[in-house]
Image (cartoon, rainbow, N blue to C red):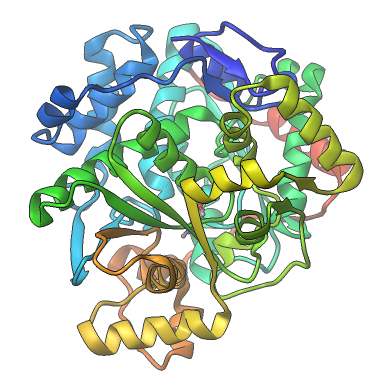
Length: 469
Ligand SMILES: *Cc1c(COP(=O)(O)O)cnc(C)c1O
């Protein structure tokens, strides 16, 4: 298995090199040169596996022998041993034809743990093998930061710096990131939005001299390994739900920000999993909804919403989808991305838009609807949705065709977003792990959303902290 860039100027690199490269050196995103096809009989056999066994089968296609079998099995076991549920990502039936896939049983109570526990262990494994220190740089809308820090803290050979938008993350998200007292962890709270943070790290990663000098590595979903780890639960959920309902195809409604999680579903479908519609659920930051409805991809006005982890205008992984939409033509992708840079928008014609609508449905959920959905589901079934999951459920209500079976991805535990839950007049009890955070001191620095200042902070961090391998 080889990896190539969506823009065509990186080709023929292996799995570990693709993990280490993160953002492709030509500014594009890495994708597998050929998506493996899983035959029907193999799917049958996979449907009986445990989560960890299934993860091994799927991830092996992409690692393609670069990590010895036992080491890879070990990495997977270790990564999911920190989850509080024996099934890792259990499925709950919440109403007729609608199941919630609970992705929040990991250490930081959000779905990011599924991929970042694995990526953290993988980085540590690579650091030990190569003897090279790994410096992780990431931007977060709240959950990735907490999860990445949890995934690497205390591991040998790794330092980490996370940029989060100052004052725009939930209290619990902020506490999870900033209460870690470890000199290898640097939290920078930037005066700006997540889009500013994402743009800055993309620019820093594009400065190849800086990137190479400090061995900078990515943990955002620009890293293909994250997408890969996330395809596993689409398979797992499909198998559980198909068994229970007898459905042949299953739709998925996915709360979406950076298009990473839903792209993992697209990949699962391309591998041969009988996925029906992929429903893109957004909040008022609805660039993706507008693209899927009208074929115009253009950032709009930024909104702070009840679902802050989806307050994103420019969806990083969208370029991966474009690559497949345009028939795996890197020249066409480069042209469109150039157009996006100069004109601030991408427009696709009728024919392509038809294809987009085959692949996806979309619904942008208003703040009011988000809270209403939390209230009504809590009232009717006693099931408490977090505000992101609530967007997924509201989109299911609007876009799933009657009679079709749908899985809504639950991307976070409601305790992470009590600000929104309290507005629904619902009182919840924090799990003990979250409760404890409130008494701890916080470690963070507030900085301008400025590349220069942030690069300097990074250099200081790398110089002043030592790590052992
Ligand atoms: C990150 C996140 C999302 C969005 O996921 P993408 O992969 O960026 O689309 C949705 N919900 C929660 C709770 C998140 O943390």
